[in-house]
Length: 286
Image 1: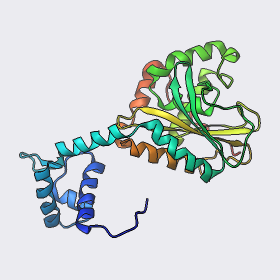
Image 2: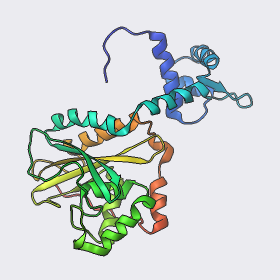
Image 3: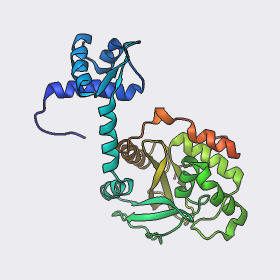
Image 4: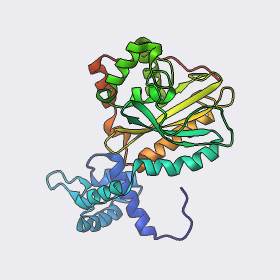
């Protein structure tokens, strides 16, 4: 995001120092911090003295390393309290749907599985019966598969087992797949960062779904793009897939998500219940 207008250069330099501490995710020595912030060590030290007085930064006496302080934590908590994931995503998909000219939905995990809570039509209308309150299957839709790939298995396992047991008799939108097929699709979704369906569960309609995470690394919701086969491109290098990922990553960042801090957690949980990594299947071109 570009902000027009004249700012205060010293504040922006200080911001780079704080940003370097955030991105590092660990205490840093003065020279390390100065290098990451692209400032001279003497200049960084002067800023750090002021930041220590404000308790934005603290220094470990034994090691001399700097890390974020108590006031930085208070700022982070205040930020998190002021942002509701659904409200944030709801505003974002209005502009996003207009940008990509496709239907965009927001889904959360409900009592009976992935549940649509907002639908934003694009200028490219599709004849799909999707409305607020619609429940998607975990195994037969892009939305459901992204929950299967990225939400805690402890949350989804009961619903997943029920769908696999009932097969074609499930009530949600989409036909259930087998556990073996699902394992391969989960592996693909984790590799790509999104799940997709081609001409399923509605013939002639594609779907791409990506997760939005919060500061703790928990998946909060899924954003799904729905469009005609041959128009909505589900391929990893496509503009549609990349635009969706840019949208969800931006929302996750606004909720405090830091990927490097929680990498591998979900995969480890899936291994505990028997849904392991499987050979990756590359999605076909639309």
